[in-house]
Amino acid sequence: MKKVIWITGASSGFGMATALQLLRNTEHKICVSARRHELLDILVEEGGYAFPLDVTDSVEVHSVRRKIEDEVGEIDAVLVNAGYGVYGPVEAVPKEAALRQFEVNVFGALETIRAVLPGMRKNKGGRIVITSSTAAHVSSAGMGYYAATKHSIKALGIALRQEVKSFGIDVVMIEPGVVDTPFGNVALDKNYINTKDGAYAPLMKEVKQYMLSALQRAPGPEETRDVMVRALVGEKVKPIYRTTKGSLGLTALSRLLPAAAYDFIIQEGMKRLK
Picture 1: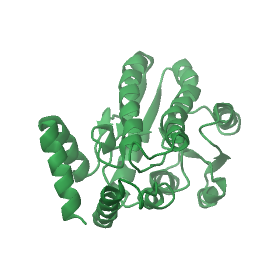
Picture 2: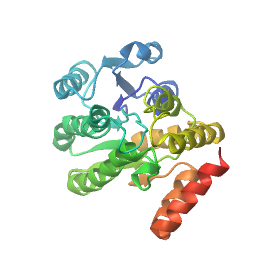
Picture 3: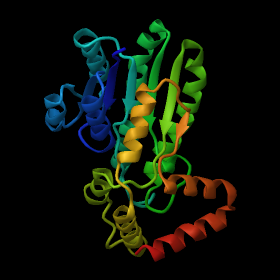
């Protein structure tokens, strides 16, 4: 049976990869959205339905949902994927940048979920797949705000999973570690708070070197993409998928070690990957 699937943040990274995989290997109807909608042309050429969208505009989110229902059909599954990372010290990240991080990663995700839930409840079924991160469990210097958004998504996703189970709706969270996609490079270029002359300059230099080295060693998006496809269209799914070895290891460390030991391991890891 053909499903109508909506993927937000589909202009690059996991969203683009998952949409392409579905378009090229299934008969499902794939609806894609992104703020930079001109980057969705490749997905339209593959048979996708594209809708410009800034997820921080709640009116726009619900408008896109209505357009999908009117032009394509009722939504069976959604990949809540729009998001980005801001890196910098807690003290130094401007308030506007911190607010925007939450507006996109948390409130944009929530508005997307709210938009699809009434239809899914009416149809007594559906699938909500949320792109989360290892950062939902751990944090480290320079990534406090990004990690805070993913901690929030984890808490909201758990509550949502319990709230909609009786309606036949599955909620799935995907938690990759570091993966080689444009996400990391954009974060370290456009969204990296410049602290070269500030009190945190030495620390943030280490953080950036660590992250660049981690990206160079990271796997590609294929494993996470395939899990996202399975989460969207598979018959049975798990509530949480951790898709890289790094995700599994860091999550275990954060649970098992005392805070001081965890901090030490993260600091030593930065030194070794420089």
